Every structure is written in structure tokens, then in C-alpha cells.
Length: 467
Ligand SMILES: Cc1cc2nc3c(=O)[nH]c(=O)nc-3n(C[C@H](O)[C@H](O)[C@H](O)COP(=O)(O)OP(=O)(O)OC[C@H]3O[C@@H](n4cnc5c(N)ncnc54)[C@H](O)[C@@H]3O)c2cc1C
Image 1 (tube, rainbow, N blue to C red):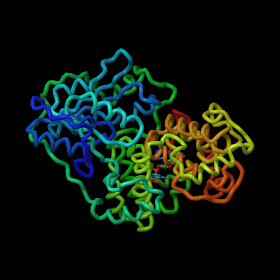
Image 2 (tube, rainbow, N blue to C red; image 1 turned 45 degrees about the horizontal axis):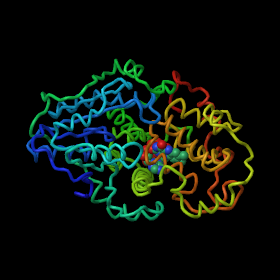
Image 3 (spheres, rainbow, N blue to C red; image 1 turned 90 degrees about the vertical axis):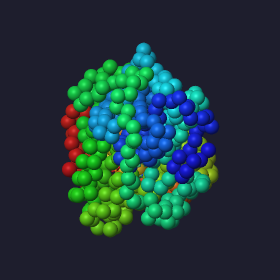
Image 4 (tube, rainbow, N blue to C red; image 1 turned 135 degrees about the vertical axis):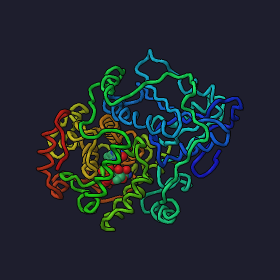
């Protein structure tokens, strides 16, 4: 049941009148500022005259769990503990290392809670988490949408493309692109006793903690991107001060540091899109660059969230429009000029040096440049035995290596390569009328040799900015 434009009740169970606290289960909006879930949880705690407890867990068995993803999440924990302490709010972080570690922590915490507030994220494992906790807990559970600048509920159906959502967003922008005030708790919870295991995380023990987890240790932490709001803000500051002014021209040049590279901070909720959008709006930069950036951050990003929110098939080719299905049927049996296995692709062993460079960037750094990502996806379609295999390969590689993977943008970006949110182009083998991108012409639009040389210099220990 919808409570307001950002909040839904996930069940119709009552508030526990004997509850000792309100529980905010922080899953995706891992921040203290501009967080609608936290604001709602504080309001509910104050209304019920109770303290607030914030719980964040990291389990070992989510899909693609690795040293890279774990480290990035853990890098944001200590700063949150300090920030919540200042707010008088007990923040518990628990790292579930393996099958022998205590489990069901949220359900256990719920026994003493009056109600639960959690994050409404339309993708990956979160919808299932929310369905299960609403079913298992005997108390009211509210899920709050702090995903975008505009609440997802403002759109009543799946939007066909950017041109259909853009005018709707533009109409609402003045109302929502305004600072969001934090709220304060009336009762401190710092000394509250809770039935929950806790992991103390510091900058010094992260590597040790990660090594103790039963996760994929073959994907190392990013040598460039470090998690947490402070690191995200440092990058945001650099972006608005030095990079934004040329964003409109440089963002499509993978050999330059020309885009924000904030998507991993957005994915884990270390930064809110609102904070970024306001910083860009206020920046001293040409209007065309600001407009181009806000188009990506708000129109394109919120179109992706709209897709996973409304389309139950977002994890498969079934999410594509009928014109793509028609062209795929017509070209399914076309001869592929070259086929690569997942292993060859993962190891960047193709004939295409530009594609290999993009793959190497992703494997080494946890990120792939915005522009080259489109080419990367398109080529895998041409080199796979079927469209389904291409889709599975792209989802696997993107979500395994990219810090910003497992996000609505991941699925929408990959589906875009197959025609989602796009239009038919000229008919050609294998691609049919899906838009085609060739490495030789794409590579002429920037200094591809410099990018390739940089990518070759990368390895887990020795990586730096392209420029
Ligand atoms: C095959 C493929 C896979 C992709 N996988 C992901 C992914 O896993 N996670 C992810 O966040 N993005 C993904 N994208 C979208 C886009 O490539 C990234 O958002 C972008 O590379 C992030 O870099 P940036 O922060 O420097 O972007 P900037 O150019 O600085 O853009 C600012 C922000 O706008 C948003 N944005 C930019 N481009 C897009 C887009 N095309 N669609 C939706 N939002 C956008 C992002 O949140 C980004 O951080 C994918 C695109 C493709 C084609």
C-alpha cells in the first residue's frame, strides 16, 4: 500500500507497541545525508517516541561477491559509524563471513523493534529481501525510494524511451531539484542494548576482514576507486571544479579524465543523485556541459530505474520491444564472423585491440568508460553464438567486475545494446536493425592508441588515471 510518493507499506502488519526502537535496515542508500529512508525512519521513531537503530549487513553469498565489492562497501563503514554517533543514532554493521557466521540478523533485530524501515531499490537482490522481511517480520515494514531526484512513483508505467520520460522529468524538476534537510532524533540510541552481532571496521582491518570471507578472491579491490561518501565527495569536488567545464566535449573520450566517474558512488548510495545534481547546477561551468551532465544523471539514470521498477523481465531479453524480437528472429541464424568463449572475452583475448582495452580497464579498475561501454556491449553481440548467450555474458562480466554493476543502469545499459530505449536503424547481418557500432570508426573519435597503451599498463597493483 502506498503511503506517500516515496514510501510504501510492504505488509499490513501493525506497529509493535512493545517495541524498544524503530529499525532502519540500510541496504542500498549507504549514507547519512539526503537519504529519504533515513529521514522517514527518524520521523517514525520520533512519532512513536522511540529511539532509532540503523542496521547494515554485508553477507558473503550475494551474486558476484568479491574482494572488490566487499572492500568498496567496507570503506564506507567507519565514516558512517562516526556520523551516526554524532547524530545520537546507534549504527550496527555486521559482516557475515561464511556459512558458520550468525544469520537472520534482521529478523532477530525485528523482534525488539516497533517497525522496520528499509530501502526500496528496484533491482538485484533487494526486491526479494524486502518481500521476505515483510513476510517474516510480525511488524510493519515500510520501503522508501531514495533512488532518484524524482520519486519513481511519479511515473505510472514503463517509459518507452528518453524522449517520453524527459518532458515529464522537466515538468517536475523545479519541485524536486532543491536541497533536502536532514532530520534529528528526539531520543538517542547510542547506549541501547541490541541482540545482534557487530563487526568493527577500520581502514586498517578491511583487507584482513575481506580475506576471511567466503567470497571470490580472484577479483581484487580497485586500485583507483575507494568507497565511502568522503571519497565520493572528493571525486565530485574534482569533477565540478576541473572536469565539468569540458564535459560536453570530453565525456566521449576514453583517453581523458572527462566524465564524473561517480556511478559506483551512486550505485552504493554513498552519494545521492540530488547532492550531485545540485553541485552541478551551482557549479561555475558552461550551461551546455551542465545540461549534458544532468541529462545523463537524471533523464537517463531515472529512465533505467523506471525500467527495472516496472518491467519484471529486466534481467532477460524479454524486456526488449517487439521490433527487436522481430529482427532477432530474422537474424538468429546469421553466420557470426568470429566467436569467442566467455574465457577468451574475460581474458581480453580478441582480435580487437580497442575492445580488449575496454575489457582490461574494467577488470583492472572496476570501471569502464561510459563511451567505450557501448562498443564493448555491441561487439559481444556480434561475437556470441546467440543473442541470449551475448546477454548472459555481458551481465556476468559487467556485474562481476564493475563496481557500479548489479544496478538498474547495468541491465538497461546492456539491453540498450540490443535496442532498448533506441529505435530501428539499417538492416545488417547478425544485428538486424539494432544500432551497430564498429571499433574502427568509434576509435577514430578519440586517441584510441593512447587509451589502448594506457590499458596495457594497467594491472591490479599499478593503475592510474588515463591522463
Ligand atoms: C553495456 C553497458 C553497461 C552499463 N553498465 C552500467 C552499470 O553497471 N552501472 C551503471 O551505473 N551504468 C552502466 N551503464 C551506463 C553508463 O555507461 C555508466 O553509467 C557510465 O559509464 C558511468 O560513468 P560516469 O559516472 O563517468 O558517467 P557520467 O558521464 O559522468 O554520467 C553521470 C551519471 O549519469 C548516469 N549515466 C550516465 N550514462 C548513463 C546511461 N547511459 N544510462 C543510465 N545512466 C547513465 C550514471 O549514474 C553516471 O554516473 C552501462 C552502459 C552500457 C552501454
